[in-house]
Length: 314
Ligand SMILES: NC(=O)c1ccc[n+]([C@@H]2O[C@H](COP(=O)([O-])OP(=O)(O)OC[C@H]3O[C@@H](n4cnc5c(N)ncnc54)[C@H](O)[C@@H]3O)[C@@H](O)[C@H]2O)c1
Image (cartoon, rainbow, N blue to C red; front, side, top):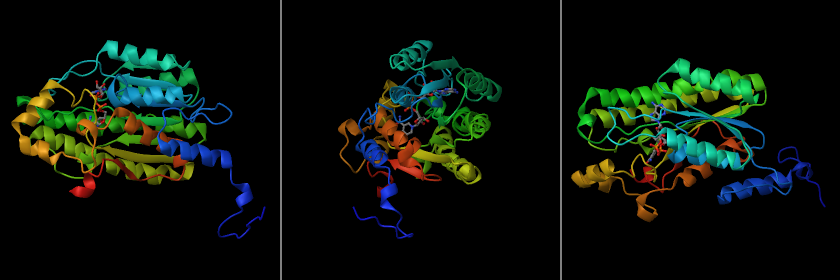
């Protein structure tokens, strides 16, 4: 075999072909990606996830467990006056625990409100004390206070900002010292939205403004953290999904809203054909697995879209 030692393009003999194959598997989006030694993509790592009881948070938690990680997580498990549809329940959280444990991984899941900095800090501190390390943070909790009469109130704006901007700060800040303490690097992914890149969502109500402003603002947090944490090999990215088939929009209130405002619905169309117009939570999980695993080891400071062409068409 010819060895290419050109310093500009490296020594191909040193390529880790097993890892290359694993990275290609991740890109192909399979649900399981054990390598030839039966190792998972995140074996024995620990992930901290907000909004873990259902929807995308549950999908990420279960897939991470399948790939070998233990999970620390929390969810509010209560409804919010500013939000017309129901939020997760204790039963949802228990179901996520069961699904994680099916893969033989630990699930330390609690009830906490992401607006409560001290409560969130306790969840992550206690979880790391029990599991011994932290590698991955997924700031995922969110609400869509864009429907019903409550969307017209100032409280709907504040709910968006408090839960999806201050809440992201509350989730990531207390986690950073644990990532640093490991000295092994790490990966933080903040779930934004296409509404974090373009302003076309909804009717300009306070609820829509809170959603759009918070989803844009977390890009600023991400960029600042990505710069500060890069020397310690801690990577930070935002993900920007188009509509996802979760209880956030697969609910009666959103259906009614779309019927009431057909031009808004028209504006939410994806250029790529997507069955029922919505991604599945698993589609977002697949992209997050790419970002947090070795496949994404040089990806930081990016706004990573999985939007079926939505933002490119604005
Ligand atoms: N569903 C979509 O179409 C869509 C599209 C783009 C981005 N997103 C974003 O994806 C993320 C996940 O949403 P999803 O689609 O899984 O919806 P979801 O409603 O199923 O999940 C959100 C979770 O966050 C929890 N939560 C809400 N307020 C909380 C609080 N104060 N403290 C702690 N937990 C709280 C909810 O109980 C719920 O379990 C959100 O940030 C959302 O804004 C969703």
